[in-house]
Image 1 (cartoon, rainbow, N blue to C red):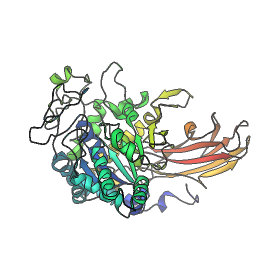
Image 2 (image 1 turned 90 degrees about the vertical axis):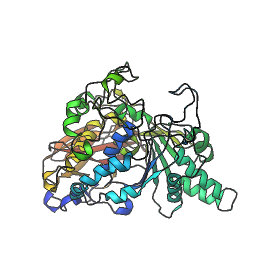
Image 3 (image 1 turned 135 degrees about the vertical axis):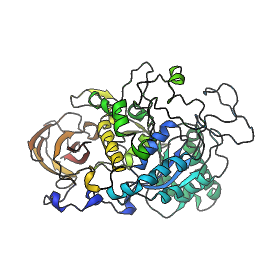
Image 4 (image 1 turned 45 degrees about the vertical axis):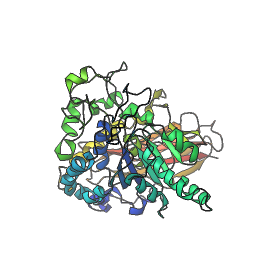
Length: 502
């Protein structure tokens, strides 16, 4: 929210500060754990372009159901209902050097350009120092302390009061090992109740699905107070894009161009960092993954996921774990009930404290659309990704496009009676002084009033919202102000206001 309307484009700070700097200590604090398969790799390329908006405390190799390294001693492993039908000594493991030798080496090449667009980007050395090897030997392996689990353990026990968002792009086993080492140290001591309560409050697990059994077998029963978000439903927007009897659909009809091969090849797979991004049949493969069919037309033809056209969007299934942390103007990772690029979630159970993404939301026509909680943001997210990828090749700030700042005048909650009219005023400023198109809309699922409200757009950032006569005291209405600039890649930011009926 903005407290006054005296802002103009000319008053904005220069360069990257035009995006609105947050104090370093207020950046969302996060750790990535990943089995580094091809869609993790694609998600990592996107994630690196947003490391200016998060405090990355770790990037940790971990195992999961689909990828594990083995112990190097010939020990075999088997669980029923897996891709393999006989015991294996390893499974589809892609190694522990991809992040350091490929992704971060490319990041180092483009870092001088990125920091001209925002000096908050961490140095390549900082990110490299955060890469650790966690529990990788087998699926569900959490018996041993590792460099990665030790890092998570120490972060959970340190004196930083911020939440620690633990992203699980693969299994949760390295996270589970960190928690088990805390339990082993403190259980049975006088400190244990306090330590357990503090860790349970601090840790937030953002899982792109449960890709092993360690959540069900250990975290849920032993640490039921930790908020865990199962974000697998976000695959509808960001997961594998292929013909599996459901058609090749990504995004909403107007947004599908952003998932086409022509758009991806021209706008994403460019430059040192973008060239590492994975798309369908682009000729790239993951080292060590014997089942990697996604870059090879001949192998893909007989695969479980029938290929689309070359360079079409493949998968970034782990975006769901970090999108809630990104700065859009309405992000609130501590309140999953509120929407944003990460989608909305609802609490499934209180003990354990488990949340899952909502299955459907209403579009502008009032029609329930399955997976709309993430699909509604897909076009904006893709344009933002493309603009940042262009930053990697653009050494001058003024030659890039940067997002506008959008705000609604006054407090973030106003009180109103049924039948009354609430007048709202918004403002958008743009670093390049580009025109910004404003749109007001009701986010029905965020408010407790079940119906539709009338919003009269009066132009110039003004709107009049009529509170329905049947609204009951205590009910809320969520109003979003959305601003989109007219850059080559239109960039969108938001603000939110709640009307509370009295």
